[in-house]
Image 1 (cartoon, rainbow, N blue to C red):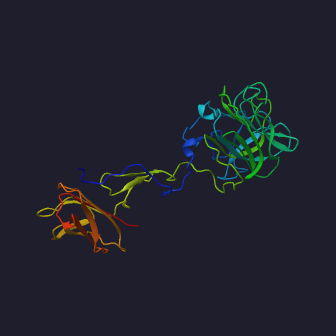
Image 2 (image 1 turned 30 degrees about the vertical axis):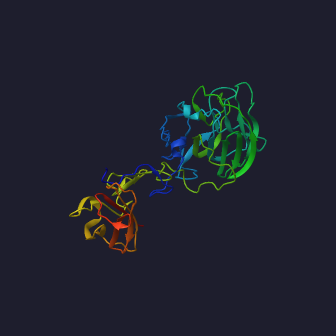
Image 3 (image 1 turned 180 degrees about the vertical axis):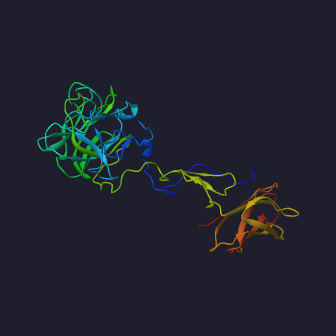
Length: 362
């Protein structure tokens, strides 16, 4: 018979710190923060992938959506390449690709992101043409058989604009500034990429984006947006925080860990005790219980070490140590400093060998 209550892995919807519940599914997270002219680019996802700046792509403090900087591309030949990762291979699964852009020209054929160096990559995002921005996708590498010139919204210049592409099941959607622009369905399985993820150029390195890109995020396995939404007002979060994390209660129930919050002093059980109620009452183990008063046969008063501001909730139980199974435990005389426990068997008071009391309170 265990003498201490023990709980583990209880899901809770809130925690102590703010975070992104889908951060574990984030494949790439680029804030493009840094000093002006720097070519050091940091992936703030859990993957911490290597990002290489080529031909002059760099951090610029001239424009930013968040954080005081963004990535600058001159539209001639510069771009970023991100180490090849299976986290960019979506297959038939859900995904979200999103970013903020500040285009400085309305020129056609200026893409934002492409999966690999194929002429028909699994996905190409932000292709400009005829005053619009488009999404393309290929499942066969030979033509745009999944998505061909699917509008992501109108092309804007010299203003920060948020774009997103999502897949939920067989439904693809595009968004501009949180407003759904296009939707279509496909059962296609997108092939694995053959090379690095490219930011700024077309897959074959023949066309290049001109302007600034900020807050680029790829999420594998999650369609973050399935209807109109409000784009974020601060940069994307870099951790899960405590959102929808598991609670792990320690073995004495004196504290619990929530996500990254660690064992904290707030108690799940605000008081508990396990005691022998026969003969001289003996406490086996307890928390926030100073003593047990033996009032009479089967009648005990649990005295709290610290009083409560309001009357708490109490759960009490006992082990049946007799042949008769008709027994129970009643909770009586409830106050903020004590609770009276009454054990009966066949309607007659009876001392019990093992009695447990757990007290809950806000």
